[in-house]
Image 1 (tube, rainbow, N blue to C red):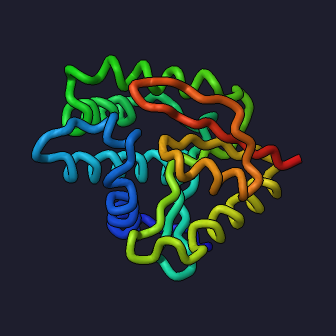
Image 2 (cartoon, rainbow, N blue to C red):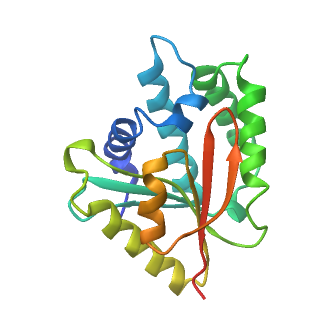
Length: 191
């Protein structure tokens, strides 16, 4: 596992944009129009910036997979963060859809503890390299790092195929949200 540098942003965004192109939850967030793929890319750029500043960004050793980790307790409201949020709202989500997306985010966050966690915001493997164990290996390295830091790992997925995958990695399904799509919330305590 490699800690990504700012110079890796384009690669990380490429991997995430490709691997989340058909993701139910991501496509719920981004406005669905002729610019959908561009909007997904903007969302991933926003998330990279947020996690780079308030968490960690990792690449697999072969640079075909990546993970964005957020430490929510490190997030601070600033003029820059507000400007980034507004840019995301107008360039990616669309003002008419913003209330639904904010409501979704609020419901998700209300399920996570207030103490320090490893929030696995995104983990993706480039589609050309999926199903080769790269993602599992990367997640196991993240679990080990979280264990050393004595932090639980939290994540959510909207993809039913991922439920078994995360359970096999030792995550516990602790809640399901029924939004316009189903969202599965997982945690892994590292005590």
